[in-house]
Image (cartoon, rainbow, N blue to C red; front, side, top):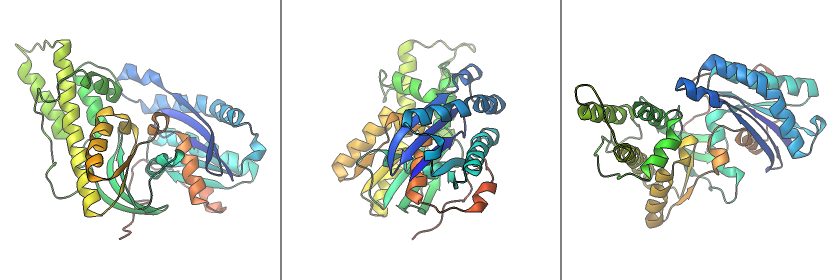
Length: 342
């Protein structure tokens, strides 16, 4: 089966082709202009998706070496995400499927991330623990199989990626904050500043990163003299290192507690923050001692991309369902694909 995937949930327009589990193409157009505003501007993102989506689809088909007549089904992201952006990709996908007389498969964005590690070999074996970390989400989920998920917990305030963006803004490092903080942290001393580690010892699987962000804010306030903050480059490096280490410590503590409690062997870290070198190194170090396996998608599959959308549709193998053509977009994660599989 050959599936065309379309992704436009936030600030990246993407199209990909997967045939029988093999990725033939994955084209991504990122909206870099949002950095000038310190974050994604929804209306501008929607307009950019409108301009990019058709050329991106054409290029994906060309790189895959196929024509529209070779497509057996179209998969598009339904949510969560920015409604205006989602509607662009979702409706283009529906129109393509309707015009070609082929099935349309609506895909949950977070569910697709959980299977982004299936775009490479080896991949985790069921059941495995999925840690979803991005600008909008921080979740722990036990993946029992395709369509079988057990929700363990999520953030009660800021997602970890959001905290990275806000701390970067405090330090004048621009947007997005994750890559630049990761880079600066590698030059800094992670023990120079003891930032808060909210909920690290809680017995549940909820997260909180607002307090960590505030801990950085108070540190900067206390460093200011007469309202003027004068930081050296090494000071900024140490703040980035301390902040990143605190965030990583919380994530790793919850992950290791979960795999022990639920007796899981494999861990999949997915979403944009999965590219963070500190997080990957810490989890691999802990897992090397405990005997667990850690799977992190290739960098090109860590952020929002259509390859994971098409791959999940391929794994689902859904038959034609006319009601999919009226599937609505949704902004919030809700409980649209979680259920207690225990």
